[in-house]
Length: 405
Image 1 (cartoon, one colour):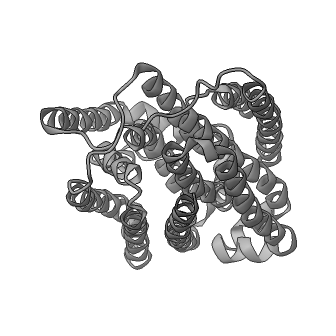
Image 2: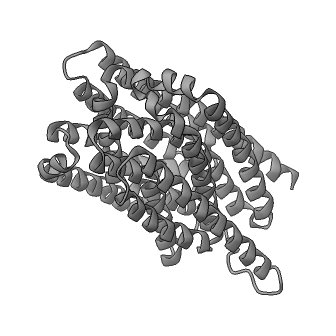
């Protein structure tokens, strides 16, 4: 029992520290490019990043699946590798074919859209390797790879700061190269992982896939719809606000992943792992929120520059929405660990309503209100339902969510 607790805290410290360093690199990336590009072109940059995140929608799904299923063997592993590379290449080629109409809709360059999406090609195989490493709880390697990827992005941003001829092209190309480097590094490490996992089951695969899809849409929908619905300057400013705000939610990823693998290893302690994870994340995110409240202007000036100062009044309110989103992510990962899907279903309905609200919003303030109001509501409903289900399962009903490892 004590050993399991020590492992839980050790994994949190390792992966949490790596995520913190990665987050700092990500901040530095946006700091450099926001100052170099200004609101208009920075809006283009965030659009390219969001489109890429949409294209690699299967990535988080694949990571979660391999976190449950572990490393595959022999012919099955080779077959799945072919599918992962072939699927990613097909997605990228499809984007190239649709780049012209998509670029017109988002008011960006079709050439840059194709260049930025190059990192899609190795992304699915990289996601599988990360899941394999998480399954065996090799969080030191997961952390190193996570930091490596964001460090390459900072290098790309630095190059763009000194190359004034098509800086966005340089950033997109270098990020694509970095993705290939990260994949080959991860393949070597994941190839040494022990064979630990569970059989592929339809309910696990489908449920985990839904969680991954919802998680990606929750992370990118507001940025993409802002670029589509708002004027270029307002869209750029909102995406700058989202860059700062989503950093709070980003922290939940490492804590939630450690919680997921800890519950899979010891499902009887699920309540303790959930409470500890939510408590640690809550303390960190509230500290960030206090920074937004009392030093919001300084944060925006440091990260984005003076052209983004009009979003300062909205930062604290948006921050509460991001805190709620992080807790929603943790709740969904808890559901994945136990094969119980009530939190996932609530988040799915919340996502649909959120997108509907964003489509009816036509200002930065309206986007912020739609986001925060929806996320807080989804969190409250999820918490009430999860507590009710937990009490019901402990009141004499059989618990069917117990994980077999």
